Length: 232
Image 1: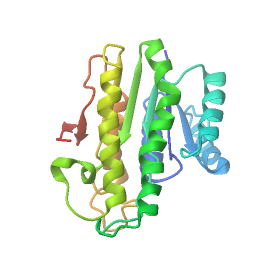
Image 2 (image 1 turned 135 degrees about the vertical axis):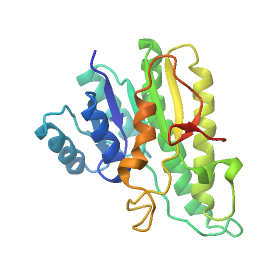
Image 3 (image 1 turned 180 degrees about the vertical axis):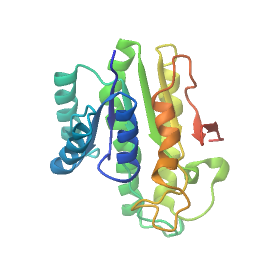
């Protein structure tokens, strides 16, 4: 059976690399983006290379957008087997938590935590019913309590929330062959990471792609960097 993989924020950076690698591994991919033309361009480039892709329009902060995507994808493809929650923002790097702009913190929570939660809600029940699912959340060591430092409060708190969500969903889907994990890609040369970052997008995407294609019986409820577990 050909698996269907949906990747959020797949029009550039890590998301584009992840969806491309998954397509090359033989999955039918759904690259999503807020802009319909951007999602279509990614899907067209993949299909032009002989891969299988169907574009999807998605704003993770909108119930209506997620609902429309759920209806469209399930209506056309029947299921989603793999979900990679990649879409995210990072707009307060280096700013202190003391006296933080809480509206900016809320923006991070709305996209990074609630957005990925909203999309997961749309597809996790189908995965449980089908007895197969892989859900990957792109997180960060900046959100790990074990590595927690000062600064970047909205980003850090939102990613800490993502890590907590991973643990909850993994516990609630235990025994259903739905594996839920978080990946820390490291500091990657993307629009968010900047040109001085130490990793390529290929290196940054590797752990997420590995988690998205785990064999049955693989880990769940874990946090991984370079395919090795790290502390939450």
